[in-house]
Length: 468
Image 1 (cartoon, one colour):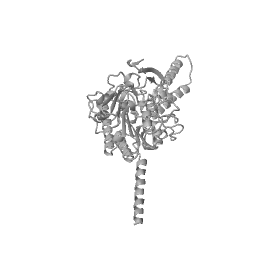
Image 2 (cartoon, helix red, strand yellow):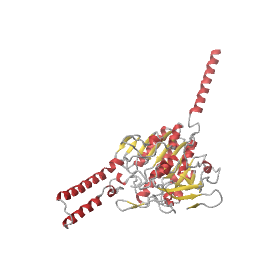
Image 3 (spheres, one colour):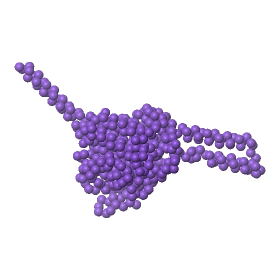
Image 4 (spheres, one colour):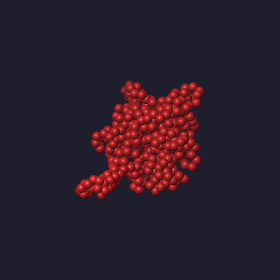
């Protein structure tokens, strides 16, 4: 009888220890939130139904806004991809990390370019990873790749906290799709005009008797012009192979990649990542390749909108958002996942396809668009949903920035905001949860490349906001 009681005591003790282990070890039960952060490339604030669009169908994104908070005064730190994304990941103005150039184009245009987001910069992914999060970047990176060789990958997403990467290290160039032309102006890199002028001038002066030039020199100039032309043509043909690369971690999946079904493949990767990590805290940064030019849409979405291929691409993005939200619902992760959707800058308004079709998004009432420092280039969508934590149906008109995600994600993950550097983002949770009605940010600075162009002043009193 005594041994039976000892066995029961041992069994109860074992069960108690097991329960304690589950309660303290299981990250999801420990209420660490998951993060699904989605950034659409070049999406205009006016392209979404929840921001007033009446002709494009974005039901999944609109539902996100209904179930969470919609930011109407959300500002990108730059109107170009590379600096804007650097600011989003680090919570710092891009000029602080050296990713704001004094010259055009201000973004990385070759995989072979040396440079990228400096290793000493701290991203929210790096800090979340230190807190035990599984982290992934799926989609576009555009923050550099190599330093000294084609395979050192010193600026790869893995060096900045992303344990898994499936996507493109650069951006979606027109050159990546046959028949869409090129974004590169070869004449900028090869002196065709100069060589031609020198040759014609030399021939003219020779025939005029002003100077005497040996026939061999003229033939040499002609040969040089031919060689330069051939080299330029060869480079033009090789651009897609050098720059249109799809990676899984550090391995090449496609070179050059094909845009057909690319968003669907990336959506599958995102859902698969969520399924693999449903029992532990995770951070997913889904960085859409759409709707950047050259604009593309999968066959299932082509012809579904009234706005050509651009509208079709917006429809495909909305479908992808719906797939990711459905995965969270199916895996019972909805209540414990903070979802954020934005754009890296305003829509591009000046793109004309190789066939002459004008392809542009809509920035609502705001002037201009991408690559400008007018409001249409930096005013972007901002939607956050976290059931039970962020009140639903909330509209916030206070000035906010996509840099604000850094301190919010860092603190919610259990990490501390770095104190050894200036952080320009402000934690949004008090504003989202109605603990305060006004943002405590007084100034937002607006740069065009590395030049300060404007300051947005939000005085901490009853005076209206001004921008000068």
